[in-house]
View (spheres, rainbow, N blue to C red):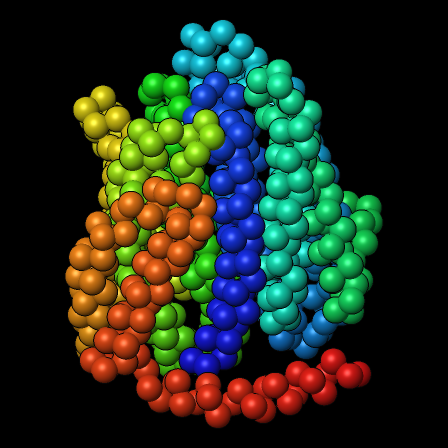
Length: 535
């Protein structure tokens, strides 16, 4: 448990740093572009490579590659066999990425038409979307290679570099927004800002790849691109990736479906959805992705050694941590949605009406936050056993339900209905995955875990009651000047966290033995760390 907590802490803390820079990026973007024509075109151009990145590179590829690499690392061949496998994969992967990216850039008008055909009804919007998407799409190839190198280091329990690279992305994009703002000057041409952003995204991919390549070399992993050859292991990886593309990517596929429906709504809807999802992605990115990244290689090692008891215990600990962190976040974001959307995004070209709509979108999205996070915990139980087929059928059913819901709710409830359908689909997905895990005997919820989650709900309810009372009292401040927004939002976060964790401690929602264990190990860990750095 303590090992999992430390791994999640390393990944989560660096991801939190990235999310802070991401918020700065989106705050600037909201004020500079607002929710108009150029903003919608940029959001579509940004969505395409990022969705494919999460679907293929960080989703399907990682969940198939990491367990196979981990098994070779723990086998008789050790690091040499694992790195030979990685070199063979890299030599194929790089050419596949280049070919796929080139084809998509050529076919970009058709891709944009499939996702946003209604943009043709607004003069210049469709053409701008195509142009920006072509500029941003090389980022997919670059960041996919980054994901592979991250997988190699994660399998070696070096989680820091892979968790840090998104910080580079946000720093470069912040520079792009600032550059675009000054280049635009008094002309008011938002396409200049959007163009600068698109260029900065591809430049960020170059910076991320250079950083990760250096990190792998520093870790003693020496990869190189050789003549492509399809070995039995590479062929096996390819067979696993195909179903994993769907199974690991239901959230990303749903994002494309949501993008299709959002582009049919009034101008600015896609931008508001993406800004709202930034708040939803904060806990999902910090906790969900951190848990999924940490648990996959650890679970693969336990299953490889035949230790079913440790595999069950690891998954139980992951579920407990996930619920401990995401339940209060979901309730807090729901109650304080308008405070956060107004306090963070309102200003410049982003109006009060825009942020009010955004707040409603946040409330709908975070209803599925526990499901978004638990999917990251349950799917590795399949992937670590090289079962990438089962999640395919689960994801297919959930996606069909999502599309059906969208056709019904979008005409009636607009962009908020779209977000609610996403949350409903995610919940259906995770409940089905858990049921299958229990039937197969791969994971079952113990009474102890159920009791712990019950206590977490009690602590969450106490926190929610306090925030329900406090939020209206701070309303004049989180819609005021910059300093008032900062302290009022900080007060909401601080009070909510204090009430939750104090209540959680006294009602037994926190594992007191784990806290004591981490306290005992902290001095030893600090001493070991300082010794290593001196070497």
